[in-house]
Amino acid sequence: MATKSKSAKDSAAKASAKKLSVNGTPNNGTSRNGAPKKAPAVRVNQYGIPDWRLEQPEFEVREVTDGPEIHYEIKGKLNTPVPPIRESKYLTKEQHLELYRWMVMNRRMEVALENLYKQSKVVGGVYFGLGQEACSCASAYALGKDDWFAPMIRNQGAQLVRGFHARDIMMQYMAKAGSPTKGKDGTSHYGDIEKRHMVSPISMLGDLLPVMAGVSLGARLQGKELACLTWIGDGGQSTGVSYEGINFAAVRKLGLVLIIESNLWAYSTPTEYQVNVKDLANRAIGYGMPGVIIDGTDACQVYDATYEAVERAHRGEGPTLIEAKLMRMKGHAIHDAAAYVPKEMHEFWRKRDCIDRFQKYLLEKKWLTPAQDKEMIAAIEKEIDAEREFAENSPMPEGPTAAEGVFCEDGCHEIKPKYGMPQKARRSEGKLKETEAAIHFK
Image (cartoon, rainbow, N blue to C red; front, side, top):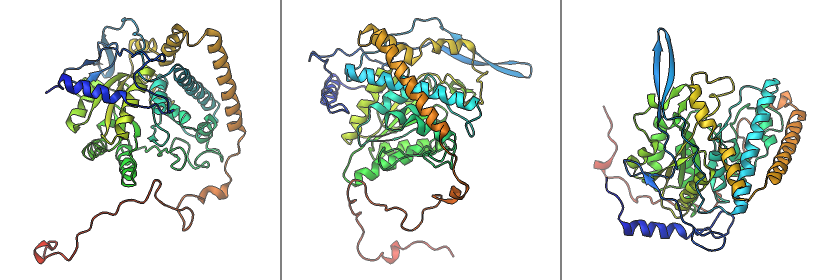
């Protein structure tokens, strides 16, 4: 595969330096004192895809059959040291601390949800993103104010970052009247297209990709280039509609920012038994779009990769595929004990817990003291307790409301362009010639 010339790489580096952060402060690849930040060397894999990780784990899962029973074993290097956090090119000290707070809030909220489930106060199941808080929170944190996002069931941290309250998510799982769907759904099927620019999750995996490509196209027709972020697992990215959505975004150069949460298990199927590629980011080559591999447990890598993809989208340069390698530390849902996962594999990734690593990084940088950390966590726990109490004390929906808001009725809401009047599509003038008419079969 052809590689970029040195001059092309230099030009790309200069272009990426001319940026602003989502908060409006300069994000030009310099440190707080104005000195140039030295970015770590970036490796590429065998197909030229950039790999930002500071370690490349060397192990694989193999299926073992003992009589009628099938289980999985893991082989490889599992005792390697935990890598350091990769320095961010864009985050300020204050942004590091704010992002850390969102990640801790994400985890504490899910612990509260698990307790509510065990107390039989949840209607249905609960889906967790344990170990994936950096991937959810840091990517959402990199979005601009007007950008859109469409979370999957495990990206609850992204909802917190983008303005939802923990009580909203708790009430939704408890089917309370005050939940986003007014008690008509017990999981994550809700959105907010007016204020928070959130598209509702879709249970049919992969369907969000063409939807978000469509949101980007719709904004462009109204004169605005936006980033439209969504996530997909390593299992969901194999669906046919995923291919169609990514390809359409690539062909039309739409602002789709796709993060593949390469969490090693599609429910109980290991990645090795689902795809015959080592890096899912390699698939970006076939679509003719940029791809990058990152450590999904490193919040700085997640933020930087998403930020650069968002800036590409804002410039109208098309979609980006980000493969975030990590591991889902819980089963598919709360009913799944994940007994199929080898214990050694869980232990390997437990040592790379994204919150523990980020906490250690901030303490070593002296941006956070142990006392400040303890005070912040106590404040979060107090807030989560209040949110949980509010959710528990909220009423269940009244019976007659079950039929309300199910179907759109005349005059219930106005549908209008969000950013401006779309440009009119060109129409051919005159009638079709007889030879151009549609074919009719007799």
